[in-house]
Image (cartoon, rainbow, N blue to C red; front, top):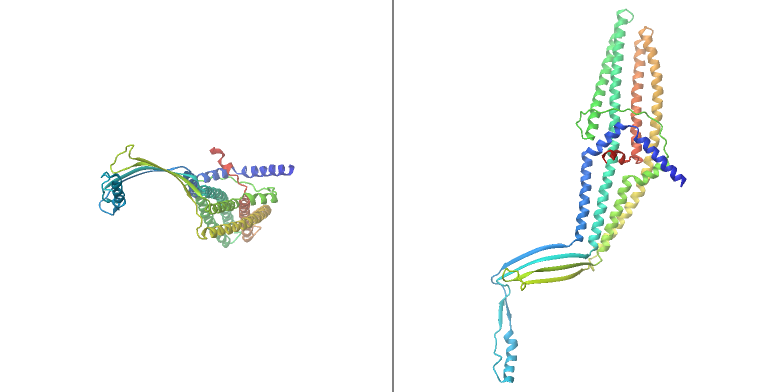
Length: 458
C-alpha cells in the first residue's frame, strides 16, 4: 500500500510539473481544443452516435399506426354457395314427415368476392415483449458510441502534440530570425571596422570586399529565417483556426532534468493510451455482435392489438367496430449455416484483436522507452551546446578585439564569427529538439490530462 501511495504522489507531482511550465502554451492548447475544425467534426460524430443509442432504445416502445382503407370494386370472382343443394333434400324430408309445406325449396346463392364498397379504419399497436435483437442492437450502438468517444480522445492527444510541436518550431524560427538580425549587426560592424582599417592603410581593399560578401551571406540566411518564421506562424494559427497572420505570444521555457519512473510510465501508458482503449472497445463490439448471432436462435415475442371499424358504409358505430389481439412468437429454427459461419468469423476477429492488443501494449512500452532516452539525449545535447557556445563566445571576443587592433586577419575574424554564430544556432536547435522530444515523450507516456485544459470552461 505504501509503494502504491508513493507512485500516485509521484505521478501527481510529475503531472503538475509538466502542466505548470508554460501557461501561454497551455492557453493555446485550450484554444485549439475548442476551435479545431477536425475535432469539432469528430465531436459531431460522437453526438450522432448518442442519438443512435436513443434510436435503438426506441424500439422497446410500442409501434402505433393508424391505417385507413376505402375500396370501390366492380367485377372480379363470383363465389357460389350451394345452399339449395345442401338443404333442399333435407327440407323435402321434413315436409314429408310433417305432412306440410313449411320447408320450401331454396335456390343456390351467388355473391361477388369483392364487395362493391368497403372500408376499414383501424389503429394497430405492436409491442415487443421480448426481443434479443433489440437488446443486442442497443448494446452494439453503445459500443460504436464508445469507439467514437475514444476516437475524440485520441485526436485530442494528437492535436495537443501537434500544437506543441508547432509552437516550439515557431519559437525556434523566431530565435533564428533574431540570430540573423544580431549576426547582420556584427557583420555590418565588421564592415565598418574593415573600412576604417583600409582608410588608415592598415589593410588592403580585398578585406573590405570580403566583409561586404559576408553581409550578403548573412542577408540570405536572414531571408530564409524570415520565411521559416512566417510559415511556422501560419501553421500554428491554422491549428488554432485563427487568421494565419495572428501574432503569437512567446514564452521561453528552460530545459531541465525531469525525473521519471520509466517502468511505472510504461505500464500506465500501456493501459491508458487511446489505442488500447480503441482495441478494447472493438473487443466489446465483437462480443455484442456475437451475442446478436446467438440471439438469432432465441424466440422473439410480440403483442399486437388492432382496433377499428369495418363495413360497406363509412361510419363509426358500435355495430361496425372490431378488436383483434394477438401474441406472436417468432423463432428462427434454421437459417442455413450462415449464423454459424458468421459466429466463427466474429470469434476469429476477436482473437485477432486480442493479438493486436498485446502487440500494441508492447509497442507502446517500447515507444515510451525510446522517447525517454531520446529526451535524455536531447537534454545532454543542450548542455553540450551551452558549453560550446560559451567557449566560442570567448574565442570570438578575443579575435574581434585583436582584429579591431589589426592583430588578427579577417579570415581569423570570419572563422571565429562563423563558429560563434553556428554555436548560437546549434543551441537554438538543440533547445527546440529538447522540447519537441519532451512533447513526444509526454504523448507516448499519455501524460496529458485533458481536464487541465477544460477547467476554465466549467
